Image (cartoon, rainbow, N blue to C red; front, side, top):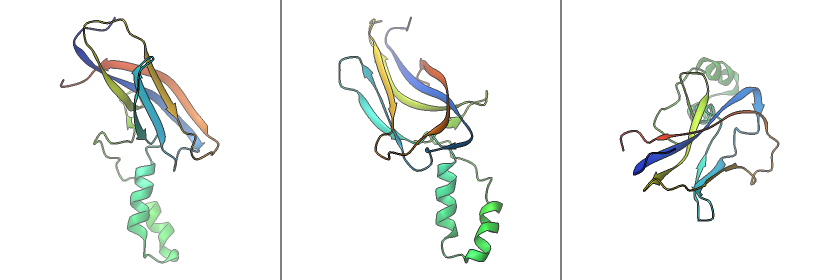
Length: 142
C-alpha cells in the first residue's frame, strides 16, 4: 500500500554480467505511467561504463596509435558521475539502478502503473542483463 499525497520514484534494479554486450552504444527508452493513459518517456543508458569510454575517446583524439592503448589502459579508473543523469548508479549492495520515472499517489488511489524498458532502434543482440526487479520508493527531498 502506498501512502497518499506522496511523490514516488520507480527504479529498475539490475546487473550486467562480465562480457555483457549490446548495451554500450544504443540508449534504451524507459516509460512509466498509469495504465491506459499516456506515459512519460525518457532515454537512458544501461551500461554505466559508456560514459567513461566516451570521455576517454574525446581525450585521446590526436594521440598517435602507438601510445593510445597505453593511455586508455591508464585511464581505466575514471569515476562515473553521480549527477542523476541517464546513466545507472551502483548501489551499496552491488546492484545498479536507474530511475524509470516518478508519479504522485494523490489520494491513496488504487491505480495500476505500467513501466517499460525497450531498445528496438539499433537492432543489435543483447546479452548479459540480469534483472533484480523494480523498486518503488518515496522520492527523496519531495
